[in-house]
Structures are given as C-alpha cells and as structure tokens.
Length: 128
Image: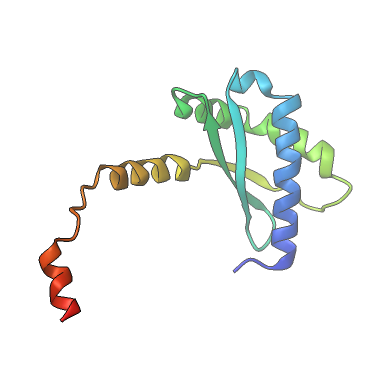
C-alpha cells in the first residue's frame, strides 16, 4: 500500500514525464502516442516505476529500448523540473503496460463464445 506521499509524488512524476515526452523527447516516439498509465514510487522515493502504453505503434519494444538508452537524459530533464521540490531525483524504470491489449484479447474471446439459447423444455419445468 502506497502512502499519500508516494501517491502524490507519483502523480507529479507522471505529469512531468508526460510533458517531457510531448515536448522534449517526441522524436523518440515518432508518430506514436504514448500514455503514462501509472507511476509507482518506492517507499524511499528513489525509484519510479513508470508504466507506458502506446497507440499506433507496430513494435513497442523498440521504443522501450530507445527509452532505456535515453534514460539518463530523461532523468536529467525531470531533474530540471522538480529539483526545487524534492531532495532525491528518482531513478526511472520503464515498463510496457499491456493491459489494453490484454483487455482486447479477453473481449475477443468473449465475442467468440457461442451461447445456445435456453430450450423450451427447461422453461416448462420451472413453471409447473
């Protein structure tokens, strides 16, 4: 369970990283749309686990590799934004959030189910 401080700090990191990705690192994503779905902060505020979701991307793993390559520059840009608000600039760890793809897969499974209609014999047993 995250404390209020961790949650507040996580929301701030999420907001700042969104702005950084849109303004300073948009060439990393090309024409893709990136969403930071969640940021989990360690209790000592030294590690931020950032979960990213991509739209209009064929291979999100390539973008994740590029993010890991530019991790130090992204952390530096984040530090420039929050250095007067916090003592520790957290290390960033990026993870692919595939819950949307998982939900689409489950939805496709439900759509593929064939449920036969109830027969009249069963209905007549309950009316007697």
